[in-house]
Image (cartoon, rainbow over the protein chains, first blue to last red):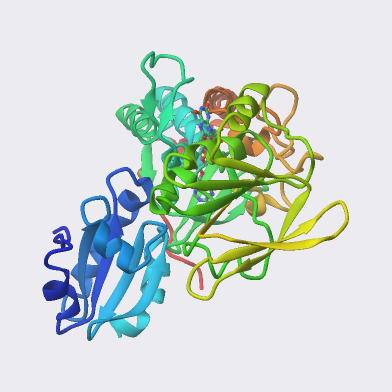
Length: 107
Length: 326
Ligand SMILES: Cc1cc2nc3c(=O)[nH]c(=O)nc-3n(C[C@H](O)[C@H](O)[C@H](O)COP(=O)(O)OP(=O)(O)OC[C@H]3O[C@@H](n4cnc5c(N)ncnc54)[C@H](O)[C@@H]3O)c2cc1C
């Protein structure tokens, strides 16, 4: 299962109003490291489906949201909870490193 | 146990894998968990790799090399090597997962890693305006002010690339002249968006949440100045990734793994090294690929001279990773 996409248009409804923690994976087609990290995120999402949602946002198609959150490097993985950014992770990392970054949300 | 394990996944490692697989050595390639494919994954068009008259995208070239290696039976593992035990007849390769693999020969092709400025706020602001890859992050700096630090080909390439997006690109260089090639220099000098800041060193990076400026110190008279800024690209070279072999493999004065003559042989029997990790001078995809070929041929020859009973233990057996030792 791969993560669903969110857009500028539905960001508020999907992410900011989400009732559980939700991680947004800011990515682009031309970004090699984004492709590397994407299957790892899918596995984390699958293994923790009851605790955290993981969605993707294409920064080329949705510049407004990317700009609003000041994205300057991708992959950028921001965890939102109650409409606010609670955690920022930048750059592709191995699964154990991502899991430890996300520990507070996976516990 | 394996006959040969290849550490890395750039042009050197994949070429070694193609040759070793075609020689029926059933190589295991430890490709890294997130950086597989090597440096060319971070670039766009590669125009000087023979066989692609129209050029080819870096990531596509690396995917093709990987497929070619797998087609002949190389097996890839997407994990990082965390420790190597290279002495003795049987080498041990420890992975991030805790698994340990054994092999009679190891080909070490880990490439090089970007050099950092070594400033206090560099790490904290990395990804928030500090970057090592213009092609990856440049597009986020449309109509912004950025700086590139460095004076070689890669610094000028980054600066020129960034003018596609940014309004102003400062090029900060410690000296008064550049190491970069004539052609690159001329292109950069002619570019109205690039402003050269000669004889300057970056001493501070400013910004709370993201980069807002840099502090410069003159290398001539120590004068301090600051510049407002949205992004800072570091292009001051790369160092060979040798940390896994410190104390085991001899290094050359340049910091690369020392190899004998034109071969890939290191000071340890059965350990071969290839690619940018052995190369202080050329550092190209094609030279890395060529040296990967050399390493596979050297490994094949080494293996053919080992006692039959050792080879029997490695040949034909399915991989049997051992659980992590406590
Ligand atoms: C932006 C850019 C543009 C370039 N453009 C060109 C070009 O147009 N033409 C050209 O010929 N060259 C180009 N180069 C240079 C070229 O990319 C390198 O010379 C070449 O990739 C070196 O190959 P390599 O196999 O030695 O190492 P790398 O490509 O660096 O690959 C090393 C691999 O080893 C892996 N690794 C490292 N440590 C471990 C570990 N502990 N466990 C597992 N895996 C590990 C890394 O993740 C990496 O995948 C460019 C380089 C850059 C940065």
